[in-house]
Length: 358
Ligand SMILES: CC(C)(COP(=O)(O)OP(=O)(O)OC[C@H]1O[C@@H](n2cnc3c(N)ncnc32)[C@H](O)[C@@H]1OP(=O)(O)O)[C@@H](O)C(=O)NCCC(=O)NCCS
Image (cartoon, rainbow, N blue to C red; front, side, top):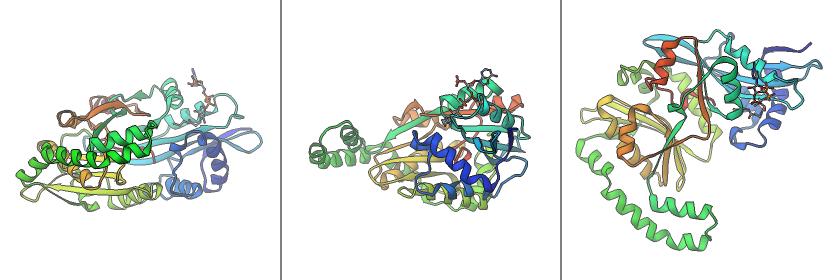
């Protein structure tokens, strides 16, 4: 008889086989810098917040083979001061040989779990349909948006042309002109002058500051993560290991009185796009923190910076010529508590990439 049960370490080889089939055609779901078996071990069993009551699930068919999987990653968030059990659901997959609706059954099982909130942030259209149809998961349009801002617009334009087939000899010959144009634009841009005149400074971000100071920076944010240093070190180590080509930078912004007013995490490689994983700013310091981000990204040689929309900073982003687009994936949430859902739908939640699927 077929059954759905908790994913165990011994199941890793069977799940890997399924993963290779399911995600072979869309490589961005595969963690490139880490062997797959290590990935499944680290992500699903070595999470410091591993919770027996919130397991990942496998479907085992009549012949005893695993033919479907859904990953569960426990997270901790607080809603108006109350600790919630939160899970990120990820890597939903079913073999082509699986019986009809097996993936849907797995999702139904996860949705019926003891968590207060389920969150998934890199869902494709197929997963979105299943989560919506079965459990009334809500698509979070705000958190499915991405912002982008060129920091070296001329260099970025050359990379864009190159990617569209313009010969390298042409784009290479234009690079000196592009470098001059980008330097001039950066010197006269708003970020540099404001950061210098207002006494804000940028330094490396210690993890204990993140764990302790988040509630001080976002006192009125209804839903926000609750971190500890061990979990942050584990997650950031994983993020770096999964993407070794890019450097993971974490930077703290202090005001003229040396008070922390915000921070950001991003992954970057010179000449490429800086991907922001989290951007946090005290209400009165959103503009200088965003300017500090732009300056810091500039210093790495990146041509562009992008991240998930942080709803509280739409104005700062807009006035600094960011543009917005729907990300390639959907962010979805499911909760039985309408107050939690309302807070998320109104943008009153910090749901950064760190809270998502890994
Ligand atoms: C996505 C994937 C898991 C779906 O597997 P599947 O076996 O087709 O899923 P199911 O048989 O359970 O569901 C099939 C359909 O029935 C629908 N369905 C399920 N229960 C239903 C119900 N009670 N009422 C109405 N429709 C229902 C689902 O919404 C889905 O609709 P769709 O075909 O329009 O998308 C599978 O295709 C896969 O592994 N893909 C590759 C990996 C992937 O992309 N995963 C998602 C990552 S984000």
